[in-house]
Length: 356
Image (cartoon, rainbow, N blue to C red):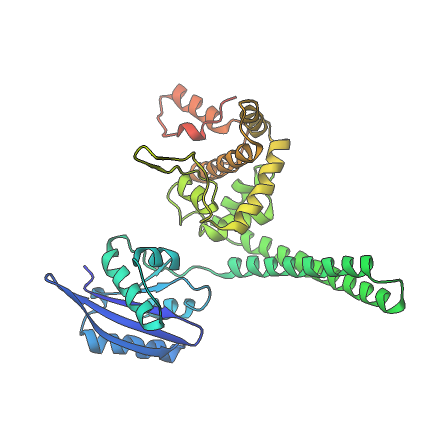
């Protein structure tokens, strides 16, 4: 059981750390210090905690907010030392801290340490993962944004600038930049495909995901990256919540009773990519097209019907990975019938049974 909780507020250049020690009777802040966000600074941080708290590695729980790449070095170095590190959402910590007036790095590190102490039972220890696929995916994403900006600029030059040698030169060079970026995107995609093919687990799950018409490289790789190859989420409902397509309802007493709706807390980029896949699925997947049309016929708005298709897609994907199979029309319904015929039992949720 953890007795020492170290909250670390991470920034680009420094680490602000607060130690809270907990006993059966009470808890108290026993130290605060600032260190450089470097290997040497992290080494000094762990030595300071060991000297101040006089605790073993098993007694300590380090907690840091997810801050993009700035907290990666901290987590990797502490993990290499055999220490327990918990990366938690900054919004989760903020919402649990109550009303606060003003803020600075010292109070932030104390709030993180208090959060770790109160919620230690739900801590998820950091585990290093192979970042190569994530890095290639994010690099491709940045190239796509760069291509979009260059192409938009080229269109503006063509539409607004008068016919002149200088305008022709700017348009020509802009389009050349677009073509060069497109070449980099294609090369990046080839590297992504080779990397996936070299790993049996990635290759298997990628094949299952992309067996659904409408889901190709972008959505397939995004799912592998953000689910840590389907190890980060224990059920499809949590995955749908992360994507922002799971509806929630507000009810309280007799005055609050809103309709079920999705929330803004989601990965919006992934949600946009999934929307494109859902649109294609409603055109070319007979089962999902029938499901979408049935909702429209029942009077559901098109946005609601499309969101339900996105939710259904994620449940199908999760089912394919769990059962280690590629997609076929009404695959869950067929498996249920097959298992009932052989006397086997299999837990298949009603939400995942795509009946003809």
